[in-house]
Length: 551
Image 1 (cartoon, rainbow, N blue to C red):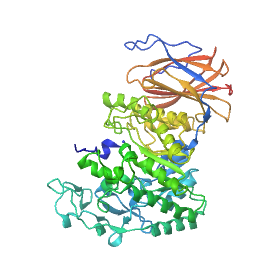
Image 2: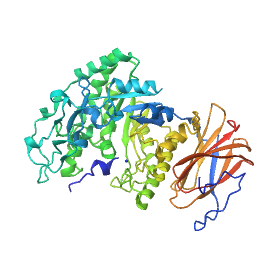
Image 3: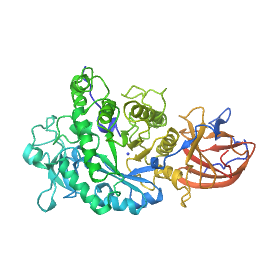
């Protein structure tokens, strides 16, 4: 049976009433109508599951200088679909399917249009590490006279289409004919020009000339190559075979190392569940014929999943990839602005996709994902054990919602607890949003650089879909930090936090994000190895236990 794939928007990836911390195990009554028989028991154990938290998990995509500084973001990625078509000589890109397959000059005033040296300069000036993407697509944007836009599917050439750029470039169609069929046989030279490894080598040399051989700490090799036939079908209408991507990454990595030997190569940047298991060619084949007998899987990879097979090929070639990277976006409408109860509950649950081997994703995936353990298993089994793993694009939606903020806080806690090495959120949220403030709660909650701890310790909860918790030790001042996330849509949460292998009493500083306000609550103390609180619905609360020591 033929399989219809979801489109990218579906298959991928948009003080009042608060209660202060109570002494010891004292808990205030809950609001009427939300009765709770007993407090939710959270156990923090400073001797359990101790390991460093990589600071690089708090990264951004296209972070502005202000955002990088305010969030103390340590790493900043320039990537995405347009990075595949970036022409560094013209400072131009082709937007592909995202925007009418237009080639256009990059806007120097837009952070989202920074793919070159200006991005590196901005990022370094803000104290962060840049990640730049090289193109392997084989095509790059070209421009018309006076750096004018060009259209890959011009209506004047290919006829009426179902949609066009009505915002100012009316001739740019969406590549879908009026009868609903995709336009094929177009001339790829209409808006793009062939590019090669030699072109990207010249780009690298130019960057090294500007920033030095050590000025390019990370180079990403393209973006979601198994989606080229969808996003960039104007120039790559046929999906890439598995062996093409394996060979290209080996060749491009060698080119990078020849010019900048200390640069870490990041790949393969695949887009999601199907992209982990099937090549672009097989995904395209499966869209019409189903996935039972896909050509690459039955032939090239000999039954192996696509990404693990890539790892075997890279290992056989030496060590071309230094950081193993994937993208992930939750499904079933979670990656959206939706605030329906159904979606918000799904958003609460779906963070399990990052870690839980007992959670079956209920969307079209219909499988256990447990992404971080899966990535670690793949590099340990098929590549080099201990290879850093990165999720360089992720987004849990609900950017303007407290539900999105609780999800974002949960995700960052999971990254630290599960030992992820690098993460960069797609993209940087607006500073007025709850999601931005959730990120700030981890990195700069007081505006003075204070942050969640840097050594993860055990934090156990009975049901992470309703209330989750993460704990850490902070080397700078010896504090223990506990992040508690009440995901419940309507109910406040009475919690009791029991502390093990930590002093049984001490001072508590509390910061809380609720109703899109990040505030400091009155300082208190805890005693008898426990503290209690009633937390507002859809809130994130950070407890800083001062002078708690390291147990």
